[in-house]
Length: 178
Image (cartoon, rainbow, N blue to C red):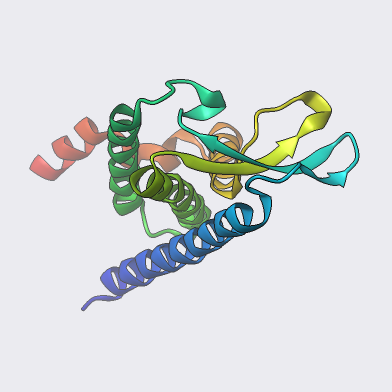
C-alpha cells in the first residue's frame, strides 16, 4: 500500500472515530435529558439566560415540518450521502485536515438526530437559550451549527480558488481523459 493511500485510510479512520465519540456523547446527553428532565420543570442554569428543558421535537429545525418523519429522514440521508462523498473526495493535504474534522462533526450531529427519529419518531431537545427566546436544541444541533459555520469561514476566508480545484468535477474528468 502506498503512503498516500495509507494516509487517506488513517484520516478516514480518524473521521469515523471523531463521529462515533461525538455520537455517543450526543446520545448520552439525550438519555440524561429523558431521565432527569422529562416531566419536570425547566432546570435553570443561568437565570434568564440558559435552561435545561425537555422537548420532543417532531419537526426539523425550529420545529418546521412537524410530523414529516419520512421526508426529514430522506433529506437527512441524502445530505449525509453528499457529506460522505465530499469527505472521500477531499485531498490528503494537511490544510484539509480541519475540513475532515468539521465534516465528521456534522455527520455525527446528523446521525445523532436521525437515530432519535428512527427510534422515537422525534428528536430529544433540551437546551433552552431563554435570553433571546431561541428554540430548544440539543448537542447534535450544536455540532451541526458550529461545524457548518467553521466550514463557511474556511471556504470564504481561508481557502483560495486553487485549493478547491478538487470540487470542479468537470475539469477533473477532462484532466483524467488527457
